[in-house]
Length: 450
Ligand code: PHE
Image (tube, rainbow, N blue to C red):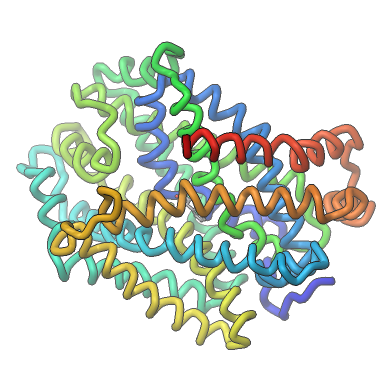
């Protein structure tokens, strides 16, 4: 059934897993997770996040891979192939639109990471440097040309990786960057937890406080789990199509989930102790990474080095996620418009430059244009993670649970009987995909509306 073109597949299972982890680990882990933990009761949030990720998100992740590998084409083609119905192609198109929306603001933040990496290499955040980190950040993002130029550079770098193809581009860069990313975050973590006063940060992260855990915390945990694992955006459907036939999808799903979650906790351990050691408010949000941390670097021993390591890590996390978003769009365009990889990448790049510009300018000169009180940038962020990704996740589980036969599901996860997967585990997974996950997603959506 596979419609893979030669070269459009990962050379090994490790390559596939590294690329999927590269997509999952991104800005979501490095700034969103730590402050959400802080705002929602520390360990109480982590426990609920872990349960949701294990019970709901992992089966959805598996479903995406099943659709992708069985379908073997772009998300649109794969949905049609596994469901046997043309109408399901729309789900693949929705995935492409979702990635486009995420990318429109992701490239802007990606541009900021390059700017901050350059500043850190110039030792702007070295110990003793005098900076007004608030003014620096707001002055930069609110200006017109510089952030657009950096976003453009970020798009070009993503484009280069995409044009090199699945094996030489996506796989090769992920295999190199993912292990480095773990090493970097562990190094920063060691520096952070050995600062005087760091214990308060660890306590804040790991001491459960169920009193500040509310219903909205539950929603935040679900949304974060989706965003962090890149669910509902057809990412794993696209990468699934490039996955070797012999790969063990259940094990891959477990490895991807565990790595992404472990990295998020490591990021929390790298950031929060430092924040507490310098007596700063932890629920800073977006500003945490670009405003608070630079301030901290200038005050701590080895701050200059740590700032370089941190912004290299942030850049690598951002670009590997950006590559996956770009690939979903490019693969979809290659299929829909019947064009080459190079052309699809060029069209995607140019279109993203336009929407990226609009998002970037909405932090400055276009600030006054708001929709429901949110800037265009925030609106893209809000709509993609709260609406489009949830819808995408729901379509995935409905497609696998109700339109793919359990026999075919088993065939896929056992690689046509070559792998042993416990019958009980497979039944539990299928039950979750068919009933539990759709109910949880619909229930959450209803509670958000009312
Ligand atoms: N998972 C990425 C992050 O944590 C974001 C992302 C979402 C990437 C959807 C691809 C698809 O930043």
